[in-house]
Image 1 (cartoon, rainbow, N blue to C red):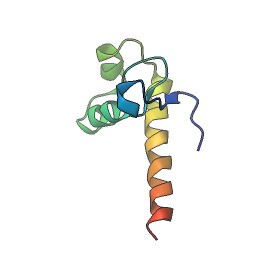
Image 2 (spheres, one colour):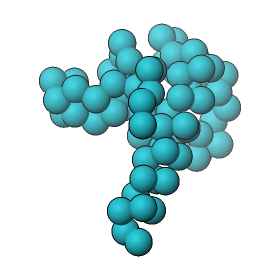
Image 3 (cartoon, helix red, strand yellow):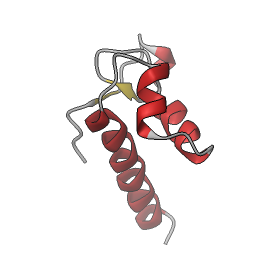
Image 4 (cartoon, one colour):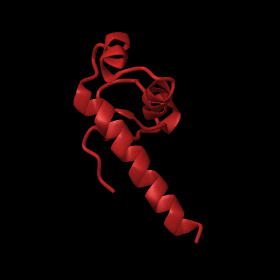
Length: 73
């Protein structure tokens, strides 16, 4: 699973997945989407993000969960 827009680095946010070049965790983007925020509202809160970054966070989470399903079977 390779995601160009997602970075995992122990020196950034304790190794949590973040949007590359930022300190915005993927988890935060997903929580904001889950709370009903639009992509535009998320970008307004985090101006360094783009719509592609928000989609990348969703794709990363989906791939992560798909891999977890394999692990727990």
